[in-house]
Amino acid sequence: MEDSEERLLVLEEHTLSEDVGFTGDGSMDKNGNPVLKHNTGNWRACSFILWTECCERFAYYGISKSLVTYLKTRLHQGNVTAAWNFTTWQGTCYLTPLVGAVLADSWWGRYRTIAVFSAIYLIGMAILTISSSLSSLQPSPQLNYVSPQPNFSQYLLFFTSLYMIAIGAGGIKPCVSAFGADQFDETDPIERSNKGSFFNWFYFCINLGSLAAGTVLVYLQQYYGWGLGYGVPTLFMGLAMGSFFIGSKIYRFQKPGGSPITRVCQVLVASVRKWRVQFPLDNCCLYELPGKNSAIEGSCKLAHTDQLRFLDKAAVVTHTDSKHGNFSNPWRLCTVTQVEELKLLLRMFPIWFTGIVFFMVCAQDSSSFIEQGMVLKKQIGSFTIAPASLSTFEVLTFIAFVPIYDKIIVPVARRFTGKVRGFTELQRMGTGLILSILAMVSAALVETKRLQIAREMGLVHVKVEVPMSILWLVPQYMLVGLAEVFTSIGQIEFFYDQSPNALRSVCTAFALVTVSLGSYMSSFVLSLVSYFTTSGGKPGWIPDNLNEGRLDLFFWLISALSLLNLIVFLFCSSRYRYKTASV
Image (cartoon, rainbow, N blue to C red):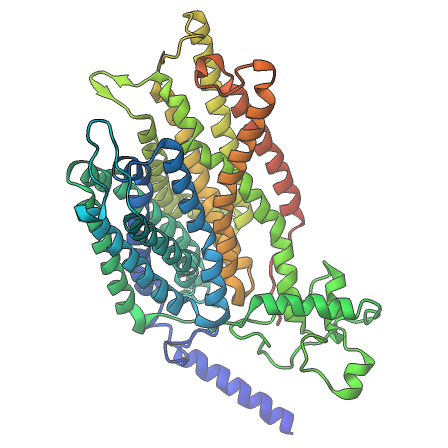
């Protein structure tokens, strides 16, 4: 009788929840209360988040696209020093998200992390603007070919501002996309579909900010001074913060789940301590909390999977556990959900690894593609095209194709596949990997033709440009842009959807780390190529005079590595098991 009354009470509460219209994914308001669907979250809340991201990227690219120029012209640094300072700062910007993500998922939550780190970012931008505006905070101008070096305080102020921005980016990058996706209820089919569109428009805003920075800000910095060139993005960053806080009342929040590092260690320790324990005949006998609530704050229960069975021993209830009733020590006994959380991370790792090679291809658009453009004919009538400006075609392709993908391709694909988002995240990522291979093949074919013209005209041993239009490089830039629409967005969507609920910021941060590791891998491959191809006094594949080199072979090498990476990706994705919530 009591069981019947309890079931009736639960049914009445569920019916009341549906009638009132609360979200079904456990989201709350700022005060920790359940939230209603009709007046919180969704696109209304996301408009503030997308604006914040667009302004932050506008500020970031406004610095990164011209930082080397500033270091050389204002701080009088040499090529090597300026390049080293730039790459170190950029690498830091893509590594600090790991810190911000752990803080968000463990203790602060995404909203508070974004707020705190945005303030650090804004202060850094303000200091940078002041540093670049006041002559007393900069070294004296060059005089008679003598370049005075900055004093310690000038260096300290400038690099303090620069690394405050890097720290600020570390809290914003991994949290803002996850926080935006949190505004859509996963249990609602319509809102779940909108979540897929959100990631498309999120990356659209990133590239819009990049395009504006590469045109408007670079122009202001060149013709109106660095003070104004850095002051404008500082103003926009301040407006973005204000906009972000205005939306606080309509945001949906998720509880932080505690330290993910601790939970991972608990599963490993518990499974090792029980390595001799036999598995129960029925997986239902593995330990899990009764009811629908998970032991991990902010996370739903996960269904048991048969992969990585050794870890299941952490959830085996031994005779000792039953005898003493000691079910509260996670270092001895973990829930199935906690074990599955670690399994999810391990299953995602091979997919994560393939992203490194993809971003190695993307890194070519700011390195070897530019070098290739420097030895092609840059004159188009009376207009001269700077090789670095060709990346605009990549950005424009991205911006133009995102609406096409979201509004045309997805609805058409949905009719054939029956999937809400048209394709699975892995199918989308695989398509981008294929396009990245085509981009490198295009670059290799263009370079092969360029070297043929150089040989025919006797320019091999002359360090001059070849009479072949630089516009032949446009297809490879456009293919990289298309590849990013598929793989970059698909990757961030995959890591958000497939990560445990309480680890979404951390997994997003790991997705961002692949960008940094892709650049490092490109440098590593380049070093190996230089080492092995310059032995015996040979000029190598990539000498100072590219007419004497074989840059085409370097592009074919990257193509081959990308093809191998695609094969690994297809193998791993075919064996991947998608996350399933426990019912």
